[in-house]
Image 1 (cartoon, helix red, strand yellow):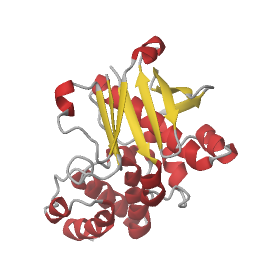
Image 2 (cartoon, rainbow over the protein chains, first blue to last red):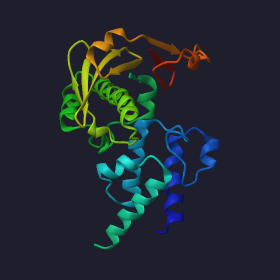
Image 3 (cartoon, one colour):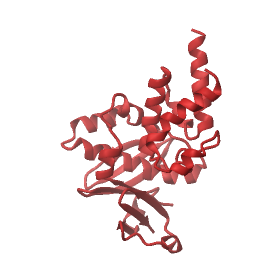
Image 4 (cartoon, rainbow over the protein chains, first blue to last red):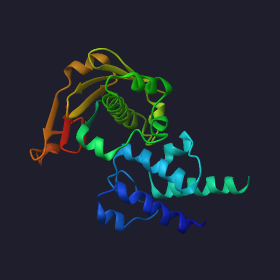
Length: 87
Length: 151
């Protein structure tokens, strides 16, 4: 799965948790879940759980701590997928 | 420095399903999960602990300049009279919560004695003042119907 594909999948995960349609339409790497998409912090947990399920990876606490932007989240997913592939 | 956090319980009910598999494990320590499991009202305990973590994080974030999503590293202890303590990396923040049927509001301060002097204003929609920023609140929290300001 390449970066673009990860971001596309990530978008479908994020969408239900933001009511800011304009910000959702403008999602790019620099989009911040809380500042730009106005996602409730309790729903960040849902995004992490959805990412785990959808990509079949496990997000540890240190990785979760960084998952505030599309860029950081995409990097973590790519890294975890790579680790998986190497096994 | 002060922190505050309000949870609109009616919105929380539809916005977050904390009974979802692995949800609690991502944000609460083992001790906190025990508090939730043994609480008379587990919903109330979940959002009480959450508002304690959020209000303490708001101070810690400003103090350290570190922005992250690490709720499990904020360790809550709940005392009587809705008082509590949140510990993170050798820093302690003291909390006081106001638990109502429709919302839970928590204030946090780095010094326990400061809590008594905190002034709180809670507004419910549609009565949110447009110009609240002019009043220079020390911390602002929005959720659902509620706007909470502390001074």
